[in-house]
Image 1 (tube, rainbow, N blue to C red):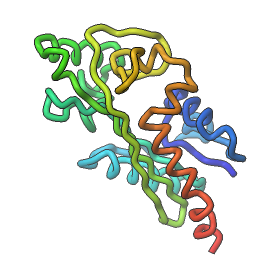
Image 2: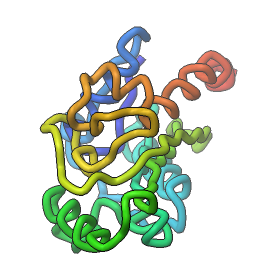
Image 3: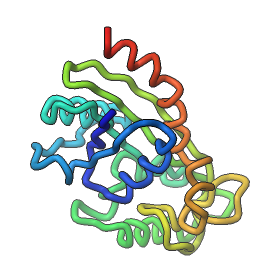
Image 4: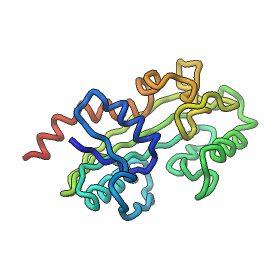
Length: 201
């Protein structure tokens, strides 16, 4: 089965492919299927954005498509950066600038109030307009400096609950086991047999 990820992010594709590796699924990214119209992420939640990406990508490509909208929710910032995680420091922001802004905003926040969670909403859609959604979460805290070089986004700053290492300092298999995306994909994998039955009906 071919599954198109509604993203150009090769690190995200690699992470998803690793988590789905035991299944007979070939994972493609938008970079491998030619130019498709951009999807505006204007939803008011992670799930709304994931659904929009999945539906539009499936309809424009003809592939079963997976929309992923993920982000960091920081309690001391009233839930920011939230759905704006990828562009927290501006529309042209990169990971380094987003991380720097987060650290700056939390500079005076004591350790016990630096609680946060990663949230991942996944939407699987077919070209006919059917879709299914799941969500995964990982609780943790924001460190005072980045550690590690693996992963992407806020991984160098996020230390999962019960762990001593940031996501970016962990072995990939350890991160996948506990991460928000890993949790969401685990639930999606559980539902896949039922989903495939519905698609064939």
